[in-house]
Image (cartoon, rainbow, N blue to C red; front, side):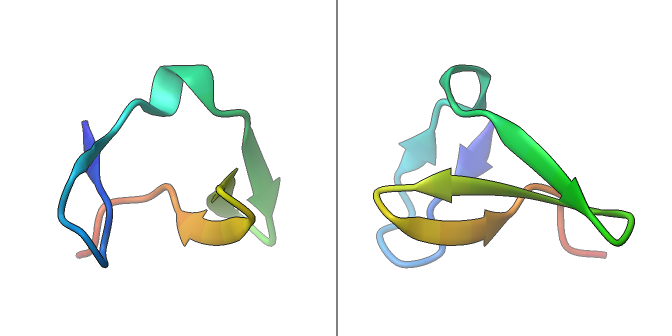
Length: 40
C-alpha cells in the first residue's frame, strides 16, 4: 500500500498504471507524478 505524500491517505496502486523511467517507477495520480518505490 502506498500513502499519498500530501494527505497521507492510502492510494490503491493496483488501479494505477506504473511507468518505469530510468530504473525508477512512477505512477500518475490525479495529474501528479509519484514515486512508486518506497523511500530507502
